[in-house]
Image (cartoon, rainbow, N blue to C red; front, top):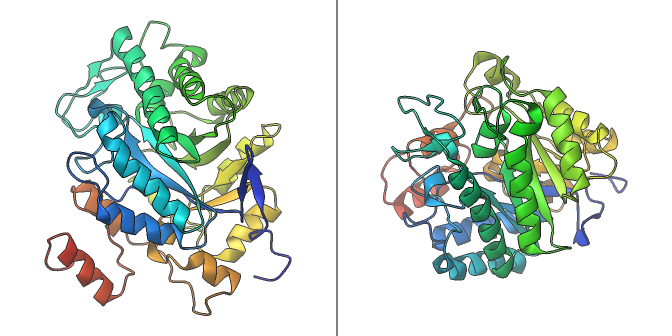
Length: 378
């Protein structure tokens, strides 16, 4: 990139100084131990991601309650026993010169458990989850707040609420999956209630000035799902509360595998127009665009055209951890692209296996598989 590049200009979020406009967006790789603790595989992965040259790393979703774990190999923040590992993870990221955030989540009907809880008994695969009681809703709100407090105490610079991908918060928001007839269902305002209660509780738990970001679903990409006419008002409510940023995405597990989405997903920056819609509806909240931002020129265009304030790289950074340094010209080699027709990383975590990338060279793939106790290529 040339000297006038916007991509490598500093930016400030809630008093935090970002050295450039590139962040690592959360990417679930499933490296944690079966009990939810951080291990050397997690630390090595995020050390490499933080050393990439991004300004900020948002660590993949960690479960705020065992009932909401989306995988048997997901990090957890629901007990103090996880604190030493979380603190080491924050230090590891900081040591490489990046800011560290961690994403909090409850998977709801997408939990890997046989007995699942959700806003309504909306069938998911072969399982019908149990409708959450008011007491369970309130306990879950508290679990987000308690998790956020631990993240702060562990030394992270901020926390991100996972309000995307069709997980529990979206399950409350969406008219497809929320059929409740109490104050948490029915009208858009009622369906928004859980999301805002979680946000309020997290903000109170971490205290004024501590940055709380939000992974924001702009559109479910389904005919009968959430669309901008309902998500824009939510974005404005989050802005009123002083949210640090909105990291905008579209689509859920119910739409990710539909032909239309699969075709669209191959295009560079395919979700940036949703980020732009949210950004133009807000007064000042920073917006992150994500979604196959393969090339520095695409990232630069998104920023220059005002579609977003920051760009988030996930699978693209996983495929080539030198992307930022190559974009800046510090490393002369060509960027290794995330292959649009490939979903190996997603397929592996879907099978409960740790993710690796098909674009890694043979030596790296074999070393990784040996480390995790596998033979062969997948």
